[in-house]
Every structure is written in structure tokens, then in C-alpha cells.
Image (cartoon, rainbow, N blue to C red; front, top):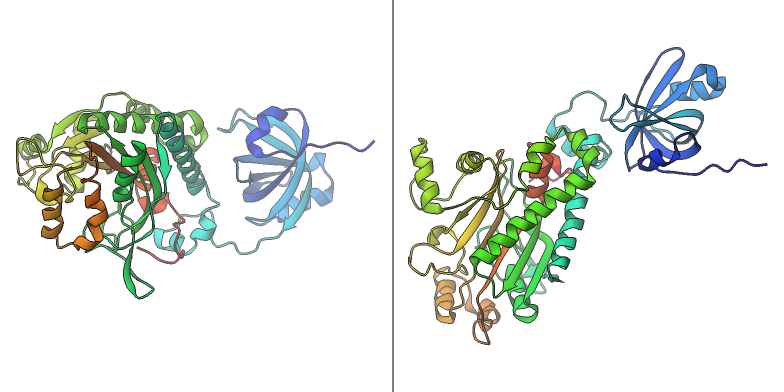
Length: 435
């Protein structure tokens, strides 16, 4: 009778302890002696060890194990065993190896490599532990985003990637030709989301955004993904309450679903768990300036915060903190005027601790037609491109608010990575481009 051998994935090893199985895998690393070969295997779902004992297999199988090169692909057969010595908890005792694809001179060896080298090899670097764990967590954050907003009654909209307007200013736009007309890669889906909110009350967009500005810090990218909810009949307080619940939900989902990946990255899970405790502290921009000045920062009212200031403020509270009501001069034209002050707008940035800076920016939107028209003109933006946006203030406008969360910045924060470009090793651009 022919033996029936289940083909499984490494992540399901716990269900097959004591059974002989077949797994398609790649060789990550190996070590051994004259009598044993230890193969570090990966299959895209997890990493674990395969053990080949010379005394238990044919000479051919043992020689095959000894000759395997890094990143060779194969089918391995053997019995799953518990392994208390590994963080994964299981291994396979191999009795047969069928080589599928050989690999020679794989460039990313087990030694340390610099960031520039990994940029050039990022199409291969995807296979390694850090990007594996990071991108698994990124996938959880994406799925959790849809789950959260679906439960909250939001409708998903898709904003165009080619636009004729500049919601965040004209100096950071990638310009392209649109059949003889000037067009730009989108900086944000927010303005379109505002139109959606007037139709569906609560909407969110989720897509790529572009900034034509060379990265000058470890926290900036020229291409990234943004989640941008917009809510009708929401004031600033309602928006902040939603934001903190959303961030807490994302972190909880990662803690729940990515325990192994967090271990692979060495992330402090208890520290991460502390960031789910609500509410997050809230201080005004005025109070933030005073706090910084009291702690010897050379800052004046009216400036935007840089990395050192953001790091200090968030670490001061040991958790994410909202800075509210920024100066009007450093914020976008659509933000609502403060009811009691002409120099500030009803806005908020959510700063993450540990040096990860702003992960959310948002505001209540101004609804005054004449005021917004003047602001658009003052910013040097073409009214023709914004007539549709001004229409939203003519036909049944309501108080509304919105915010944007940068996915890559959130991934970096949750994973505890020090460099956003290392955390996201394969942006959706040509892999040799280095913004």
C-alpha cells in the first residue's frame, strides 16, 4: 500500500507532531558535523529546523544535505517533533530530500551587510528574517484596518492617483503629462474623501501617496501608503477618540496574531501593550512649546516640530500623545479656524514614543465657503482646480473631520525598527531607486 503523506506548511507543524509529512522549503542556512546536518528551513510561512542524522538515512540523503547551498529549494520528508530549544517549538527529522532548484553564490551571506548593499539586493532580501517578520506584521495592520473601519460603519473609497490639485502644497509634487495637461501623482486622498463623507457620512481611502522631496531623515519616504478616514458630523474630540481606538486596535491585533514575528524582531511586547491603554494624553501646541522650552529646547512659537522635539514630547508621556491646535501658518488651508483664536487651527498630530514621531495628522475641516476660497487664493492654488471642493461648502455642508495614518510609519513603530526603509524593504518602485 502506498503511504499517504500530507503536504503541509511550516506554520502548521504543531498539528502534525509524530506524523511523517512533506514540506516545500528553501535552505536559509545550515550547520553540521560528520554525523549530523542541521538545515534552517523556510517556506514563506515560518522558519524552523530540519535535522538529518547520518545513522538514520541513506548515504545519498546525507550527502545531499551536506552539499546543499544557501537558498536552494527542495521538498523535505520526515517526522515532525516538538523542540523546546527553539522559539518556534518544532522541527522535522528529515529522511528524504528532493532538490528542486539549486542555488550558487547567493549574495546575501549570513554575515552583516550594510543598508546600501541591501538596497541593491532587496528583491532577495525579502526572503530574510527581518523583512519576513516586518511584512507579515504589515499585512496584519492592513487587514486590521479594514476590520476596524468596517465595524465602525465606514465605506471604502478609492481616490485617484493622478490629480490636477495640490492639497498639501505645490513644492512636493511629482509632475506628469496627462494628454497635454499638467497632472500630478497624488499627495493624499483627503479632499476626495471629504466629498465621499458628504454622501456616505463615514468613508476611508487607502492607497499610495507621493512626495517629490528627497528623504532627509530615517522617517521619510517619497512613496508610502496612507489610510485617510473622513467623518461627517464629527468634531475634533470625536475624531481624536476614533483615532486612539484605531491605533490601539492595530497594536492589539499585531500582539494577537504576530507573536512569533515580534520575537524574531526582538520587539518588547509588554512595552507595545502599554500603548493600547486609553485615552492617550492630549496637550495643546502652546503647552508643548512651553514644555520644550522648560527642558532647554531652543524653539519658538510658530515653528513645526522636528524629530528631537517630537521624540521628547512622546517619551515624556511614555505613550502616544496628541498635540492639538497648531499655528495656522504651518498647516494646510482646509483646516478649521479656532473659534477663539485667529492664529491657530483645530488640528492634531499623534506622536509615537521611542523616536518614531508623527504617525497621524488630522484636523476638523473648515466649512466656510468664502474663507476657504480666500485661503486657496492666498496659497497660490488655482481656483478652477478647487471649484468642486468649494461646492461641498455650498450644498448642505456639515461639520466634519478627518485624519491620515501613514502605514509605513506605523509599521516601523509597531515593529520597533530603527529605519523605515529597512522595515519596508521592497517599495512599489524600481528596487534600485533610493529616495
